Length: 333
Image 1: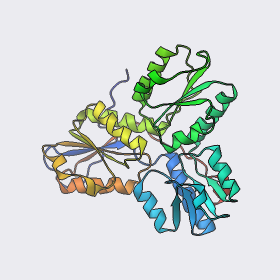
Image 2: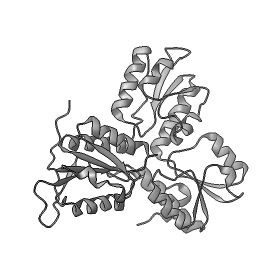
Image 3: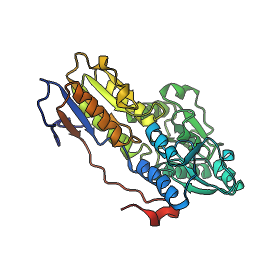
Image 4: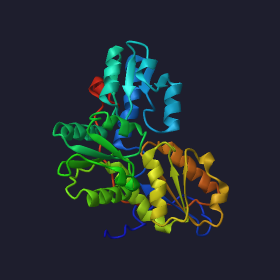
């Protein structure tokens, strides 16, 4: 068991006289991860290079503010490639796509730019590798999530989706000596390992992936929430309801001891009744959330007397991913 993380790491205090006992614990790290930053910048640079309209399949990342801001600049979001005019520029989202989507884009002569997070690409490569070796691949993830659809599409004849521990009973394999599990990158670490344990009880020879599939940023944000949750009467997670890693942060906060936890897209969605009788509010944000949205929540809480802001720092992130090769000369300073 890991030692508790001190809550007074990297404290920053707001100016003024906070109401007695009221404070905000601000999780660090939070917000944009390297994969999201790369994906959003990919669309911005594609706009600069090619001009509007630029087409993006699905949401580039799961955040309404990001999508609406890009749409105002001339980005057109579509569900499928057949909605894109032939020969146009199409960006694939951070969540990745299946080979069938690549083929469909090629048939329409689309100029594609792949903004798939490199950590998702790693899982795709693992799926292809183990399919070539004729393994049954148990993909732990949420049914209907774009990342899961893309990964499963790499080897549909070998991949079975396992949507949580309760789905394990329905899993069957051809050869119990050739079974491996992979996972969606944005899951709860704890729930994933519970699912793996259940799978291993059923299939004792189950193999682990070559390296962690749950991304570093997802894990780091969950660790930070776990560190502050026991101190919190309320945790506010800034993030979209279709953002898997944001939804997981609410679950992690409650599981780690927060008395209440809520997910909001914007500060205006914070219900003032949540603050009644509350002394400590924790704030974090999902990996696809720009910091301006977090600042909006901090400002709103300050209006309700929560002006004392203390950082809870459990990791420092320095990872940066290169842009897709089509745009690398356009990297911003």
